[in-house]
Amino acid sequence: MILTKEVKTIDNCMIHAFDTYYYDTYAKTVCLSFEDWSAEKESNIYIENLDVPSEYESGLFYKRELPCIVSLLSQIQLRDQDIILVDGYVTLTDQGKMGLGGYLFESLKGAYTVVGVAKNGYASDDAGRREVYRGDSKKPLFVTAIGMDVDNAVSMIQSMHGEFRIPTLLKNLDQLTRVI
Image 1 (cartoon, rainbow, N blue to C red):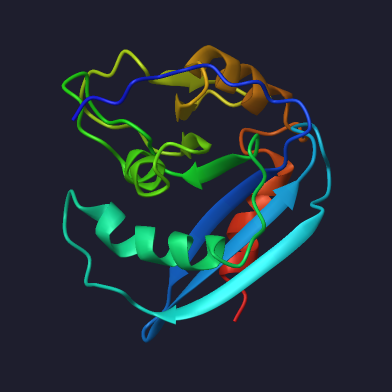
Image 2: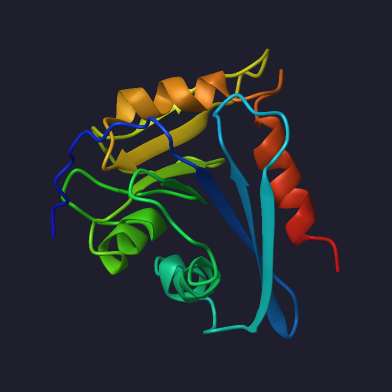
């Protein structure tokens, strides 16, 4: 399935950034919500521990993480213009192969913009993927989006607080998932 991309306004929105970390017996999903891309601190923190929904399957990462994000999302009062940010990809290939963010967008019936920020490259062509260099880093972040033009998403990620490759709030998010 090829996802269509449409531009939404981003006035009066909250950004909800998600990450999940897997322990031996459970998955910990954390969401940091913030009101502005340049925010240094989150407005809200949501945390949920779930039984690991499935074993890891190579190339099917979304099967493991999507249920965790959807479960935690059910506890958050989303507004129409809100944006969901995932640690991973929205799209993976020019042929329409979706990543975690694409499956999330589909599960939400296209109601919310989803932006993917991945730390590691994916070895296929995707015209909708952009490399973002922040700070003095020589290693990029990889940004994909649906519901928003990917170049707008790139501008938003570049404007995020922090002088290093990984924006402050995304670094904090990753750290929170690892605190038992």
